[in-house]
Image 1 (cartoon, helix red, strand yellow):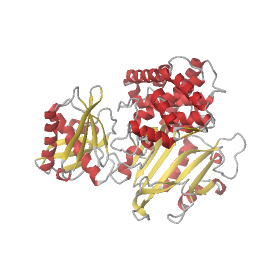
Image 2 (cartoon, helix red, strand yellow; image 1 turned 90 degrees about the vertical axis):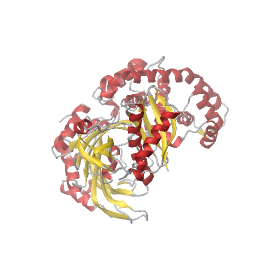
Image 3 (cartoon, rainbow, N blue to C red; image 1 turned 45 degrees about the vertical axis):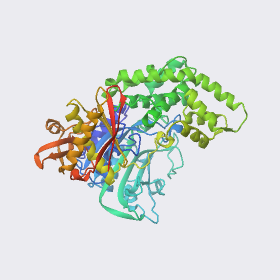
Image 4 (cartoon, rainbow, N blue to C red; image 1 turned 180 degrees about the vertical axis):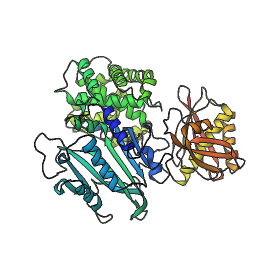
Length: 593
């Protein structure tokens, strides 16, 4: 069977796993909810972390989805045939249900029976074991039973075939990766993972162990399966392309770049791939329900870097004038299956045009200044020069590094960071989108703040009016950040009234309970939902009862937790700051003591 489009591939995958009793969930936001450890949703498992840690999923133990993802760790690799910053991840999960036998057999069945891939073009890798965890004989034997020859099974180290834990402790385990032979010549009898003709297309992770605080690995009683298959890479493999950008996913974008630049793709692949990938990622970030704008910190900084890097490579193609909107229009039209892009179309175009206008005015001057710095003959570009390019010409430090590398120079990053600290607090580590822990923090203090935001949400609605809706939140052990729609600045009396109401409900010692129900029933019951968030058909809701009567409640929200059992556990609530973050959107920062 030849599958030409992403729609066909996704439909086949979802239908296959539905036939195996999986329930489909919608793609979550690109901006993780209540997880300060990462800037973007980086994998299909990210929104499912609470359930991988043991929370019961309201729609069952078997889940399937296609998830929008952003990864910026490999941004410097974008420009080759296979790397992307934005991509779609197909995944199926088992929360303490099926195990290696079913996961491996279904992966093999989907690839060979549904997609029609020849078994002889497949190879696999499994964990070879070490002093901490056993060799994964079970997975290897399962592959042999399915007909994978022993020479096509590679036992690899922890660096290659092990997932997690994402933090210091937590669930983790071996994985088995599936590779496809893309070479034109006869398939090699033995699998060599270093041979680039073998392309990884699927990964089955088996969360078999828990790493304890003393560094030991204990077998988990409830084991989870977490799998992932990249849509872009798999579609390329199915159509015989070694270049992902030749698939129908990217070709409309590439053709528009060819038209605008009056240059062919052949001979200009790197620049066109970067422009196509970066603007596709930018459109999806801008189109997300959270309303991210280009800026100098966090998600906004990553967005700015993507747009400006695309503009820089447009200059390499000698594209004149502003062009980002033209390409964005193609992306929005071609990705209309994501309703949020069409709904936020005007916002996407406006932000791109403004960012392009800001940067285009200085990019040529900045490149001229960079060349002057290079002509000085110094091997190292000083921190002060790098900061000048950032402050005066809007060059992200990563762009200066890339330009320097092309000229055989290096940048004094430490000097740059010291210059930066003198002017503003910009964490380069977080802005690079590093996946620091990957698991939503469930420490005691963070748990208290989670419940505090529910109290805050309802207190705002009681003080300011029922039209107030949550627009986003971010919680760390130090503070809670809560965004909500409201047209003006809160006065001191209103802030104090909200704070006092939250503390009153904390002191009353109200019971907090979790229930599961159909999404429609939850909304009909009065449960609050975050604006723009897509929920599955069955959801978890947390109710904060009022006056000890479960028939009455102060707050009811759709949420995955974690939460305290009683509001008295929250402690003293304090509003630290109230400010504007966008037109019609306010932000409160708060803490608990």
